[in-house]
Amino acid sequence: MALSLSTKLDAVNTMLTAIGESPINQLGGATTVDADIAEQTLDQVSRDVQSIGWHFNTDKEFPLVRDMDNKIPVTDDIVRIDVSKYDYPNVDVAQRGNFLYDRKNHTYEFSADLTGEIVRIFDWTYLPQPFRSYITIKAARILQTKMVGSDTLHDQLAADELSALSILKEFEADTADYNIFDVYDVASVLDR
Image (cartoon, rainbow, N blue to C red):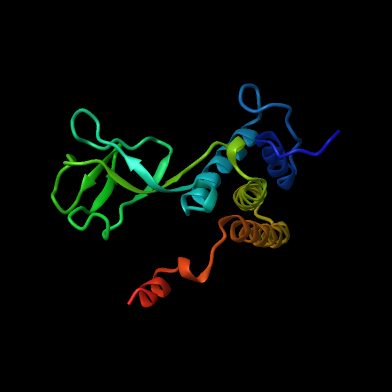
């Protein structure tokens, strides 16, 4: 069998193994309580890790378009929105519910469409492999701590988590093509 990206089922089974439980054949339906808890933990850790904002799930200059009521709706997969104060000095947005709110003008209504930087959360199948690995190991450590509480297993999983985080950060640095000029403090000094 050829190697492929890890599936969500693979991740849940890795987590179950970390707590000494037998693997399952499918997600949902007739699974064990431990499998359901493992899947919930995996989903929560995935949301938390993705909410940081990484190259793969961040869109710059994303159009934020008004609806018929001049409100800007926010879909459920968007966890962060930032509108540049330099591009829009008279607007200070915050996400409230499923809409953007203009904090400066105290309204949900906007006179024009905006553009901004958004961070999305993706389903498992859209995650790059380094993120799948890191999320799996972090979720396994959390699950093991909650359900078993073994200090020895915790230490082993924490070491694995650190290694996976290192790989994830190298992946991020390689794919995002960061450089010193991407840092605002450096760019502002150069723009004098």
